[in-house]
Image (cartoon, rainbow, N blue to C red):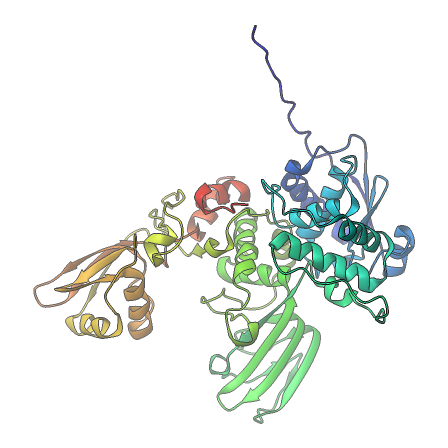
Length: 493
């Protein structure tokens, strides 16, 4: 006898009735659609209509939710999801907020203890699927303490419960509960930024030697003087930054201006997406890059002293706050289930993507698939390095390769890692001297080196040229990312 088992497909997304701020409704619906698709592995969606209410002010939100903690951006009441005012939501990671809340609704009939359900919702903020094995459950006394704290504890206890759950999910040292005699205080201040932790981008003074005009006022360059701005900050003239929304600190230094911009992670991802792709890039291409940047940030949050990022290609190009459409793309970016160490992008792979191991000698083998983009100026390139330039590279770069790393010889010496040679050539002679890592070298009798290659950059991860091309053909961000990143790069629970 043959038994046929039919698995019912997941129901399609049925948009809720959205009430509140008209300017935010389309953004919220797009983000809900993405969060719905990203949480299907956590449980079935309840049948029936549902509503989303974007409250006009904090008081209305707290009244509707019975006094939700300061750190909560949304809360369910029956089949209605109540959300904080759009002015607050837009500064947080909207995708993570909605993935968290939609997972709560999927789990409402799962019979989980309060702390277990909350842990799954926290995990869903950054992962499309539950892990194969959850961490070992704590003793029953600690489980009860977590349940009490989450259900109605003081703000200090609730903040501890969320810190404990996140540490438990990461496998970190678990924090002890607060003392019963400790003063309450507003412990939600840190938890408020959990879903949208701030990022600080610092422009070094040698990059900003122009005159500084802020909101129509020209600042006098007296070394050591500092200005602080909060809100919308507009720069005038030929300044390489146009507008920054958030907290901005400007300090006059001997070599120029030091500019520090602190903003939410989602606003940074949108700004970097626009800086790298441009505001005119197809919407789905911007969604794809924003997904990579947000995942990259998980593993590269302290690139420079003080935990800051730079606005250059070392981190990601930032020229100012992003337009509303790019911010919407970043808020609706897919949750990328990718090891953050390999969440990279490159200007063009020229149809020749490489793996992290081929480029750096560490990480996974294998690469994604990248289409050859018609009209791509970096589809193929040729260069010739003079004998003098080759001699400089031999002095700057040490020979030797790691296992699986791409290399080449410079005459009788080597092999040298191609990535090391490319970076050294860029620093010495300009970044177009050796455009990419997917290349071949032919030594010449006079000591010069003829290079033939494909692409622009390191050739690893999401190809921006291919992302634009595929999006213009109608591909979604999810399709673009699936092509760019093979399964071997993904997170292994």
